[in-house]
Image (cartoon, rainbow over all chains, first blue to last red; front, side, top):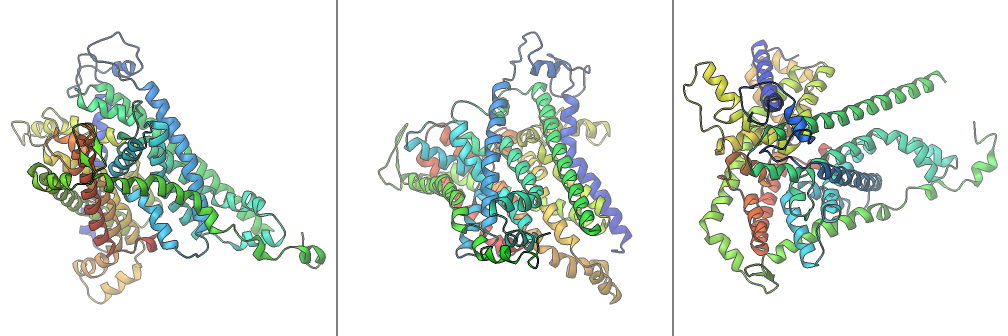
Length: 283
Length: 300
């Protein structure tokens, strides 16, 4: 549409280089994770291709000077934390967005207070929560102090996603159900929920991945038991070995699997909506 | 099907629609508001309060004093951290705009096929599903003296000796942060650009406007809300940073966030709180200024 061939060519090349910039480091890291071990270091050239560092990660190699990365318990904690955070923040997000479907006094203030959760730098929220728990003499732990600040962070995302969904929502469908005497609970379950399902799915995905990967809010609030990002951060201070790279590749693959499941569910939901629309048209 | 003509009593017996309205907003909002009050507002207020407490070697006493504040504003190392935070923010913001805007221009304006457009945006967002810390770490084998960039440059004969400035320098911190946060510029700007009516540009073209004039007088102003939103995201992220700064500078670049981490590590709660309040004030100031450009709520 914009007839400027030279500019178009330049911009397409620029975008190509940009994608290399975006993916280059991760590609290099993935290649180096197949370095041989334990003598192969985290740099080129690849002495010999091997899965040594992956086996090292799983503890399937004889002990060497490189200490194993203790990810098992941390992984379990991170997954449980992300799961709990997702449940609570999605519920809060749906409830709050539902409230915002009608105008009410003070809505501006409420909106601000919710969004504040995602804009206050994580290190500050973590510091504040650590102060509160220290002076109330409460122990800090990943399942208590980290959990509550994770929800503070992910709840705004869930809320905004649900707001966007409700904004495009035809409320006459709900009113039709009510006017036929269907109870609000049934209406929500049978009418509202299926319609907002794609939004709920997105809220779940956002909450889970944000919490799973959250580092700055966890640093001061987790207490003694570490979550996965804290374990990774701990490995930064010592010499880096390709086992951390191997872990990076595995965790990335896990995240992509989650993303693929989300994509599949989203696609199924769209197909269902299409079938539903087609049925309505044929009636 | 149920219809009023065949079943009038049911319709009459049904309560008025008003009674079936959504539960009051108050009850829906109460849990969320309580959560935010207890776990966000209270901690932030606590931070302001503790910044005035008296710091002893290992504890803080609730006797109010300005001591920690005076220390902050009279110690060169801490003022340096404040300056470092500001210039790093400006450098990363500038780099993100310079790199992100052309990409957004291409995706939002030049790619008109919806599938390719969405595909490119998804491609930009996918790295976010990689752990943040792993993404930082990935720059080390890239930029180190035996890293991929130096190897390629030496193979190409552009340099004889490996460039040492690439890693463990302020440059590597800017590169690392820009790579992570630039997507916050690409997304919103591409979104604003994709909403520009093609006829608007055709009209300008018909009236004899050059490509440069169209870019400057039509496209740039219409994309400003996206630029402002992107700038706000980048600002919030960079000002609160500390992990990238310490991991890619070898602890040579200290931001306010790094000072907080060190102070908490040595249990200097009062002093950490002072730095926290300064960082809060800085963030609020910058975001308030950027919000003047964009009404964030209307964009959603």
